[in-house]
Length: 120
Image: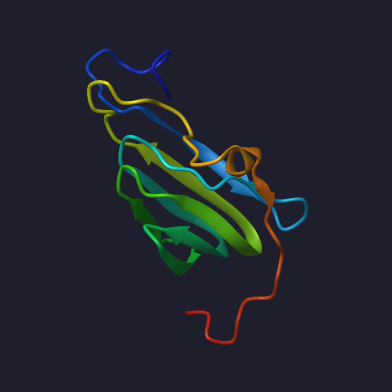
């Protein structure tokens, strides 16, 4: 869902599903001018949000404040998540925003076994 196909009454910037597989996974460290939420519905990984690293698995929600970078750092089992971008404030930009051109190119996400202290 985005500006071209959302209801006129909705202030949601965008929503949809993303996937980071264990083989050939790729992601880009980015931020938004709006708040973003990820609902993890399959798999497990280590992610970065608001300067903190978190282990996530199915059922977890990642909340990232507007202006804070987020990223997928490692994937332990094929990761699938629903993303939801809150309303973009007046004058705000949409889409993935990057602090440097190299971050915009993205990076491979390594597949690793989950660490021993991974929460069950």
